[in-house]
Image 1 (cartoon, rainbow, N blue to C red):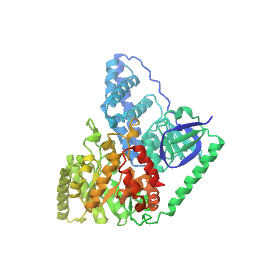
Image 2 (image 1 turned 60 degrees about the vertical axis):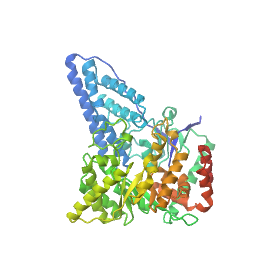
Image 3 (image 1 turned 45 degrees about the horizontal axis):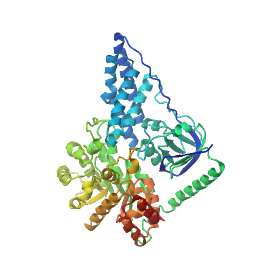
Image 4 (image 1 turned 90 degrees about the vertical axis):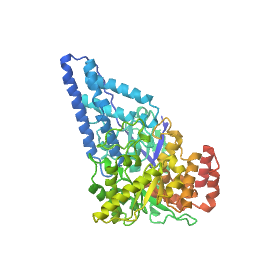
Length: 575
């Protein structure tokens, strides 16, 4: 009997194949009392489980493939950090002593307490860390039970295998690196979950947040995964198969057509020239960017250099990475964002934040101001690398002009040091700022008086403007790039920059959404930056844009306050 399930589509087209189920076997938690003299040995058994689990995660960290999404390292880092936290690694030891119980029971009691605390947290970002705590605890349980490192050890699968799971942890993804799947589907997750990032980086069809797919689908059952519309069809009949095979061929034809425009200049039908740049995380990403026609790097997230190692990268290590990107881009502009740690990007060498709200705490430029030696080391490396290409500096999470002035002071002092040492650098290196905080968006004119360019980070700008955590399933539907307030903020930022004659680009997810390309062009945006795999899709949409003819629709969109009407106008714009 055919079943249709609906979830969140991540894209990547349509897959038709056989289900391969990932089994998350529940571990039975026994409870037994200990004699007083048995307590130290049980605590030692728990300590050994923590040590072994930590070693497993660190081994997985070291085996992350070069072509894996760089965020994968950040997620594994987060799990190692949680494992090292006293609430998981020390509190159960006390419970063993106080209750004279076995280690499994002590850990289960502590986990129950922790999860209850997460459920009471009002701040969405912190509450979303609940699943990470559960995943780390499950690994400790398995170690205590004497299980292998993972119950998801890859097995040989057919060429048409589709991965079906309740959830996938970062560690699971590393273990699956050598297994080829047509698609992913999970019961939980959202647009920015671990599985979504992996699927998007591989350009695989995937549908998340299906709730009960793992229970409803049998091993080797035929399924259709429509990552475009967020639909999964289980045991489809012949008529549905025929329809989706036709859709699949149509999608594949569209992907081949994209290759035909790879070398075409990004110019609209009515002659408006546009710049299409790439967002990258590692120097190795430059090749794919150039292959897809990028005219520069609009965002190099330098923090991923800080997430790959156990210790802080040295000035020399940073210099070599920045130089590699500058040289790989052959004179095209490379915008490098200074360190933007915090939130869910926590390196091994950084202590866990005690901030009650990391998303509003010491992150972005604030962290750089609080750690001047760390910041100045990065500035030295960036300036040295600027002698090898067209590097520009970008400051994240600006909220007041004082942060720009302090940065200029640090930058000038580092420049003076390099001159004294006889080290060559670009004396006219440009300094830009990320506009991703509503306060910076509203005061953007003042920032433009002190900066050479700006880049709009729509992910955080929308999140902070609407007070919505897009990672939280309960409210993610409220994360709306087409919210009238968001559109007016974007119009204000872009118009102000254009009026002052300063370059403005966009590097958030909106820039890589082909459905929004013509709208952003109508708002005056001429510089887009996105993941390399999105470049050709956006180029295809802009090549068919006729701004002179479509401007009336865009003007109408700015007058509308109803989301449904806005979406109807957007469809008309893209027709």
